[in-house]
Image (cartoon, rainbow, N blue to C red; front, top):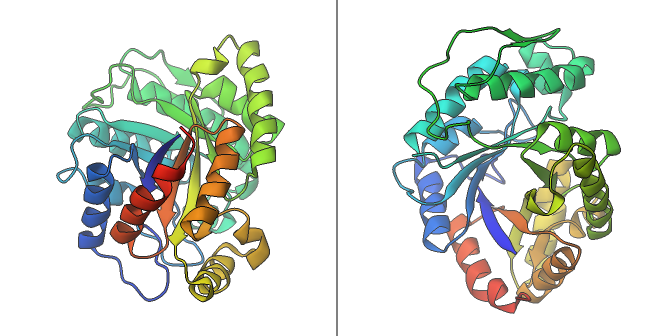
Length: 310
């Protein structure tokens, strides 16, 4: 099992955003061998949210090997052409280290701010992904849909990756979502906060069927679980504060629901949860420390990784 790291684009508690924190998280993740540096996308949320593309861009000069990934960018809210322009720049300036995760998003307030009907998100999203792929690939044929169209204008400069960065599709595991992943995606981005081990195993089996139906090789198709909140502590009282005082109100879910879907508690407890995910086929998990980013990543590296099944 491999692990990536979410950048701190959402504030927990009173800690302000800072460039120093972004750089520290990125440098620690790369130094410790984490595979991906991720940024989630919202315009507005229950807590202040830093722009994801700017957050990723802020790490370009302090990282050199780690893969950058949007988890997931919102092409309908941002607009496929403006998003493609920014993604091409990230891929170019990072030397081709970008993977593009996209989803329609689940927050109606993002759509209200963008002046787009939330009810249209799925139809728009299918077209936006196709439009995005065309704009990021120099040799792509023209695209024309109901909401978006692209004929022959070249959106330069192009990404370093010749066919454009890989595009992963976010889905919580519905049949419609996984069919979309198989049809439009180069990978599946699931949500650790919304998928249990049992649900993931079921979803992966269905995805394999859908991939075969569209002529893609299931075993070669990558996947990952994002938004795995992390806080390692042997202090049970502190763990309960994180669960009930931070994550529960932030995510709008009861503390017991949250408890089963995050890595909050002792190293042993976290190993147990990750082993269950590994057993059902999860290959990669993106961790999101809720505080003390660099320290938490070091604790995970030193206390959790050595205990995981190889």
